[in-house]
Amino acid sequence: MRKISILILINLVISALLTILMSSSDPDRMLTFFLVNLIFANCIGFSIYILLTIINLTRFPFILRIFSSLIFILAGGFLGGIAGTFLAAKLLNIEISFLNLRTLSFFLPLILVLGASAYAIFLLIGGIESNKIRFWKERQARTQAELISLRNRINPHFLFNTLNSISGLIYSDQAKAEEMIEQLSELLRYNLQMAEKPLISIEAELKAIADYLKIEKIRFGDRLTYQIKNEIVDLQLPPLLLLTLVENAVKHGIAKSVSGGKVEILLSGTAEKVSLEVFNTGCGLESGSGESTGLATLRELLRIQYQEKAQFSLTSESGGTLARIEISRRVKV
Picture (cartoon, rainbow, N blue to C red):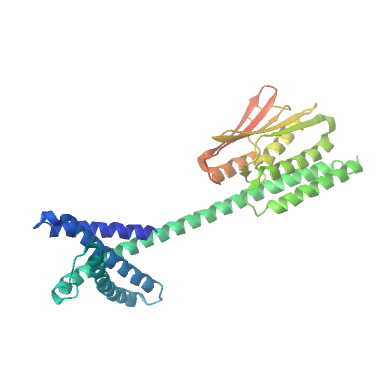
């Protein structure tokens, strides 16, 4: 479609230039000259385009293809001239003798020069388009590889923490350990199902979060309470993105507090953006403390997936710590 648009534009330019040259001696017939030139330019241009498209489908050597292209340009010009003669007679009621020797000796060299120039433009545009497509494919492949690498970094981190939670109960409370293993199996199933998917629904992510919190609830007992409130139904996001925030809240907030605390998950949105918040009432941010490996990886994942359309913040709030991700709805993922 892009090449067709360019071809029509080239035909218009050629028609306008020829009209200016032809109407210099007879300005009153400028419109007639333009319509005739436009008919001939399009008939000749599209005839050459069709024949050259056939040439491009062949596997001729480069030199043979160039030579054949020149022959086809002349052939397309000849056929297009005949078609233009017929259409001009039918549409404008103007008789034009294209097949006489004088007319052919003028138009065929002109057609060869203009056709070869247009063909060179098409080759240049095709090369630019091919380079663009190759560039974006390579960039997409690199981005996908980076996302897989980041996700692989998150997965072991999350699973090892869960296994550590189970190991702490094997000897002290086998019933609870068995219950945690059942919940872990659900998480592993989720992990395997989502491993090959770049994006998953928010419902699937919240189901995994609920399974994770059930495991930690067995471990911490009354020291952990949680609440999940979701106001979004049409969001997709990278797997484990929100789960990483919840895990961080439990590990660095609840686990470090003797009295425990509460984890509150709130998902809300407007027409412009969505907000994913995880708040914990356990230990706050320690002065000078750095981010965990999971949060550093999360920041990198957001950068790759959303570029500047997503922001992540981790702040001390009254009574706890708030982690927030804001994603613009205008970004396509």
